[in-house]
Length: 308
Ligand SMILES: O=C(O)C(=O)C[C@]1(C(=O)O)C=C[C@@H](O)C=C1
Image (cartoon, rainbow, N blue to C red; front, side, top):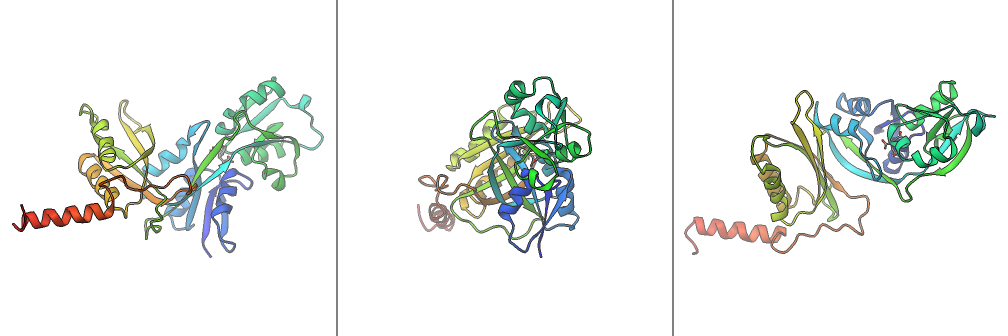
């Protein structure tokens, strides 16, 4: 029975994302931080981890980005995208006038600043480990209100002060399902590849050169993020998401080029995109597997003196 460690406790958006991916027989294991969910997989205590990676309003989830770049490698096998609208939970009997403190995951607080200014302007805001962690804190009296995923109301004996809270309509969070390196998910034609690379900081124009390796092969870059390497200013890791699967010749070729030209490249997975219909990653003219095979055959023939 496969187990999925998720960024918990029970009632987080990450649990919802894990449930979208899980088979009915999978067991879900809450971990109280993203690094701990990933560590459980690295240690073999869980088969998969489900963690948030980016939000359409607040951007990258840095705990996830940082934890994926170090320690034993993990690879994504799936992504889940969830719409994000929040509920506000309080202890039974507490009304808006009684709320002096409100807590949530920093990403969640950032997404409801407008609502808080209108409805709980006097409340002090505090960062909690997660949205559901804030609900636990409300239950034990640490805070008066928690900004949570709607499902948290089913897990904690709290009252719902407000629902459908979101400053930005259509906000979404993307989650990755990760495991220890092994057989890759099948190529579907609607895939995304993720990696993190360290480029030589000394070379002028190196990032432009590296991105050109993708552009030349007709590979669509869908996201680029940088995070500090820590310890020294001016040293960064670059995280790339692009269309295509490493099983495709053009993607394998681009990865090989990045590997040749970077100080370090870590492959973070090739996996089906959550939204398939709108995101076909068809190879541009001259970049299909067939084009590569024919061109390689021609080079071999030239080397063998068989053609001019
Ligand atoms: O705390 C949770 O519920 C999470 O799953 C984390 C997280 C995030 O990191 O962005 C997920 C979605 C929301 O945007 C707010 C918090």
